Length: 126
Image 1 (cartoon, helix red, strand yellow):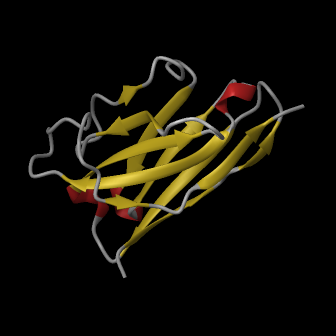
Image 2: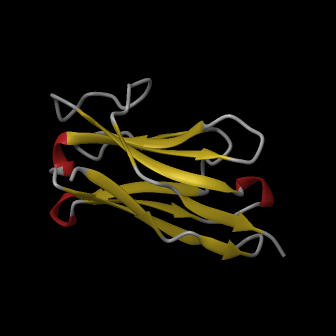
């Protein structure tokens, strides 16, 4: 069964760090662009970051720029979102998503992501 599974969420104090993982099963993540999204209670889902197949030129929402880092390890079929200097407003369910990219250098913004994980809760609170 094709699926993405997120892990690494939890409760952290403001200023703390977490690393989210997104592991693909039954498909090869190396052929896909990857995005991280989040949805806070009562708010619409928003894009957080995305990364191309080649791992270059990642994109970040302004709200997380300089604090979050997206990466991928194709050998492990896994993508990551390293989150640092966390703020209460980062509290949300975080989702990873993947979409097939024909070219290694194709951009990752504005795509119709086809596969989604089930989400992992991140709560930033003292």
